[in-house]
Structure formats: C-alpha cells, structure tokens
Length: 493
Image 1 (spheres, rainbow, N blue to C red):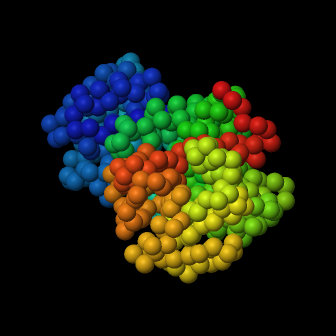
Image 2 (image 1 turned 120 degrees about the horizontal axis):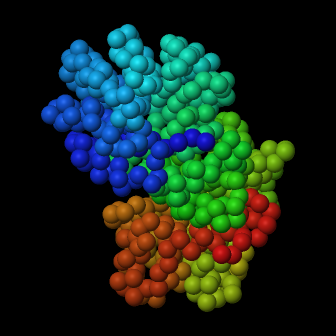
Image 3 (image 1 turned 180 degrees about the horizontal axis):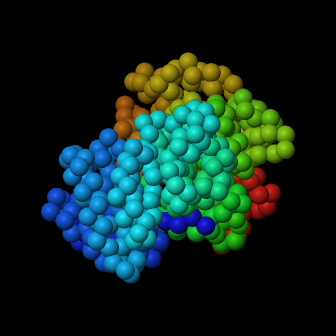
C-alpha cells in the first residue's frame, strides 16, 4: 500500500510544524523543502526530524529542477552535508531520506547518509514526458546507482498521453523502489493512484497551497478519494471533460463506493483530446466514464455500441466498458426532465414554449426532451448555424445570442434554460442572456451548479423569477449512471 508524504514549503520551521500537525493523522512522512526556508532558518534544519516525530525527507531543490534555491552549488551541498553528517545514534532523530538529483555524485554525502540510516532518493525533474515508454524506463533505470536507492522521476503531463506513457513504463519497472509522478492537473491520477503506478508514496500539500502542480491535500486524498483503500485491484471510474475545474461527480460516487464497500474509485480526467483519454483508459482499464463539456459529441467515434437516445441525440454522457468496447448512453435526458418537471410541478412539457441557450451536448438532451414531451423551443447560440442545426431536427426555431433574438425569446419565455458553461466558476459575472430583461414570469434553469447562483440566475431571481441551478439535475442523472455502471439501482442511504 502506498503512503502519503506531506510536502512542507513554508518559510519557517515553526510554520512547517504547524502544517504538519494539521495533517498528521492523514500522513506517513513529510518532505522538508529546505530551499523554500528563509536563509536563517536553514541553519536549524538538523533538529527538524526530532520535532516532526515521523520520517522526514531532506530536499534542497535547485531552481532548474523546479525549486527556489539560487545560491552556489557548493553552498547547497554543504547545507545537505551538515544536515546529515552530524547524525544521532537514534535513527528516529535523523532525516529518513535525502533527495539528490541524478547529476550529483558526492561520495562523502552518500556515505554519510548510508552510515546514519538515511536512504537516498535519486531524482530527476524532467521538462517533458517522453512519448515512448521505453525511454521513460531507460531514464528511470539510469537513475539507480545502487540497489538501496529509490528512483524518482517527475515530469509535467501536458496531456493524458503523457500519463498513459508513464503508466505503461511503470508496469515495466516492477521490483524497483520508485516514485513516478506526472505533474499538473492532467497528472492528478498518478497521485491518487500511486499504488497502481507502483510508487512507494504520493506527495501532498496543504489545502489551496500546492508545493508542486497537481498535488492534493492529505485530507482530500483520504476522505474523498479513499487513498488508503486503493490497491492494484481497485476498479477505476471517472469523468472526462475540459478544463474540468468544477465537478461534483467524485463527491457523489466515492461516498457510495465507501458505503457499499466497493473496491472502486472515481476520479476527474481533464483532457482537451478525447483520443488521449482513451489511451489512458485502456492503460488503466477504466470501467466507466461520465462525459461532460466539451466531449459529449467527440467521444461518439470511439463507441462500439450506443443506446437509441445517443443515436437520436448525437451526444453521449455515459460510457461503459464491455467486452466489445465502449458502450454509450445518455442520462442527461432523464436527469433534466426529472429535475425541471419536479421543480415546476408538472408531468410533461406539453404546451410549454422554452428558450434553450446553447447547442452542445447538454442542449441536445434538453431540446430532445422538450420535443418528446410535447413542448416547443427556441434555440439560441453564439454560432447561429449550430443553433439552426439542432433546432431543425425537431422543427423548432433558432437564432443568434444577440439583441435580434430578444423579441422571439419573449414568446418562448415560459421556461429559459442555459446549457452553456458561460457563468461557471466562483466570482464569474458572465451572463449568457445579458440582453434580455426578465419579466418575473419566467422559470429559469441554469445547468451550472458552481456557483450556486450564477449571474443569470441572480438577475432572474431579482426580477421575481423562480430559479433552479443544475445540481439537482446532476444528482438525478448520476443515479442513472450508477445503474449503467453496475447494473443495479442506486442504493439509497
């Protein structure tokens, strides 16, 4: 089972100790980033392991390796040597590990480390991830100077192809003590699935203060992603989208997995490129996927089978791995109609004239359900041609997202639904329908759920309109996804 290492990057030892105490119950070891300490504090690092009361990694990272140490290399090596050369007989008082880069060969430091029980981590922080896993394997093996060392290879993940290459390399490095890390948001899964990547531990940081790109805090790792329960047999599920800065799907699915004692975990997979995701999905043997913006249409060519709804809509938000390949479904349809009809206390859309903002995958589900339920819709979008393409399927009207459409919107204003991402994110003031003046009689739904009230909903509510965000729809459609993932009804708490 992989462990959790807390990276400490504060300017003082006292501040680092306070951070350590905050997360102590979630972690197994800590990394003291000496390069981030104030100069005067660096003279006191020798006492830190005893104060920490747990295994500590000594790291003095150079600027060219992603750190902040800018002094002479000789000064850095003296700092490292002094930290480990005057060690105690009680190894618990010493640094448990020392991280030194691949190009550092100072026998005196290495001999002192081994003499006092300090294990060497031989690391490289690459500028990019090789496309060929064999190049990663060769680089990793070249780091290993002696058999008692730990190799650490960290590289930025510019996309999920990089993560797939790292995972495929990991499978060929079995039996070697290692730490393999894809940095950045795309590489987050290498931190959560450290066990599957064969890493001895994962690196974490204090919440909202990552020491390295893509790090999570220890509490989130343990509580949300159930890091302690993940093993090589854990089934992986997730959500595909981009930029995927906001998603409530992991907090929905992971507690269910915990409650039902399922050996499974649900992760975010941010990717601009659908093809890159499918390469990683094959490497990790991902079992099921939720699909969100902008991939509800781009995943279609990768489906071996699809439901009638997906064929009719041309949009997929749920994928299941089968023996034949990926099977596509759409749960947005029922999630949307269940949510809004319950809110409006109606049984159908019959007689409703609605305005739908957007023409993407979510809009397709919304427009389809309005049509199937006997309603009519006016589809508006920044690209009028896309709005027309969607509206023409059902004999509906279409227009651009501009002043010219306001007169028609008033005629289709019983229900107004925003299906775009305009307005998403805390503090965002963007309003996709800024040119329309609410009368107070419209029911307004925004499929965004973060923030809880978008600028569009706030303006509608101020005019007296009943408003609904997308969270209820998200939960309803996720319950349908659970049924597709596991072939069973969603288990009520």
